Length: 249
Image (cartoon, rainbow, N blue to C red):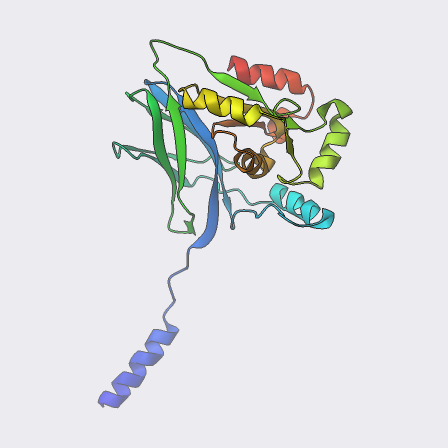
């Protein structure tokens, strides 16, 4: 009798539905910026593992990596949590229909450099948490903020060659192919060390944010929020107008 019950138990275990395994996902942070009153965090959540960026690959590998960046599946309406590492305060907000998040985190905060953690809160997906450094400026005493243009300002991108030429070049390149302007990283790092927030802006597509972030880190640029264009909503024309809107916003 005991043997029969044991066999039945094994059969039941094998027939019972197994809990669904969490799928791989990743968070692309576009950084955080703000004052002692509030900080805004931006980014995007996508399924699958982060792109490797075709480092060390040839043209075909880079082209495939670029195509993959535009074909990612966005995680819609998943919960993103931002944690103040120092105080352990948290705030949650869901991503939008395109997987983007823009999370205002109310203060008060002390001025200076702070570290925050950004996590994906989901039973269906799992993603590595990321750390986001933010230089917090005093709201009552606004000081210097550097907004660095990327295209042919801190990196050679060939923007004057025209949009089609730039698009073609970007499709078969990666962060290794982007050449920094001499001494730009050192200058911005000196400013950042003195408590000056450094923000980056480009009219390039937001889908290539990991490539741009890797270029900045690879060449010693200080971490800072990154503003890139979402072509589906903002189009590809008038890059100057887009950048001026970022500055004004």
